[in-house]
Length: 273
Image (cartoon, rainbow, N blue to C red; front, side):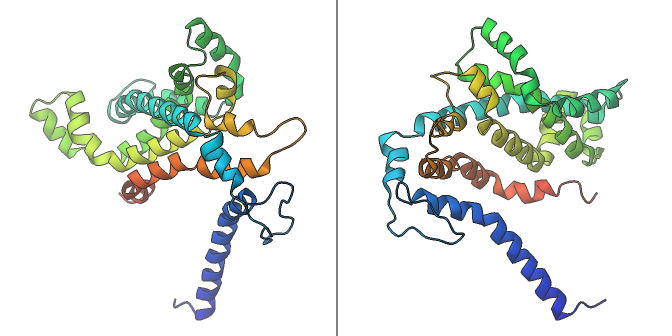
């Protein structure tokens, strides 16, 4: 049935409204970050009468965030890489092999991922401390692996299930091992899924706060902890929080730009067989 002009207008208006609603927090961050000290905006679209860049100078030059950003990026990359190296073979095994209880194992990964992170802070704190990894990038990255691997296995199994197996069967006939088949035949076909899964895990890790607060102190402090330092007992430095919040988006935006060609296809991967 042909839809009228009124329907299209309502659809466009709805899309514009959703976009504006989604972008408004970023507008608020920008306005707040250039507001003078003690002159925060009080209306939705109020602009500062005397905009200033002093808070940008502080987060970029005077007390820069680059050390904490480096920690966040390195920890995120390390945790994501190890998680994917462990999760992809596990997901491939669940997807391809006839294993007793594999659906139970798969469900266990999903259920474990639903557990609140804070519930395992103390056990993991004891483990990391006994290994001598407190306040290290490697120790914090290792603490993220249980949730990362559970999520990656759950997501990657879904991507792997929709890939036709004819090429794999032909490779096995030619004498390829399961490992060779996975790396040479399957992984090139599931690159969009790998990109989406890695993006989710990386973003989750670089913004994580509870474990970073518990397991780091000086050397491995991440961006979320640095931003929380602007919130004191007596005052919240909203201008600094806003400016630092915008700067902290750089790693996520960079990763998105690097994998953007895979994201749209990866997010819809498996919808049509």
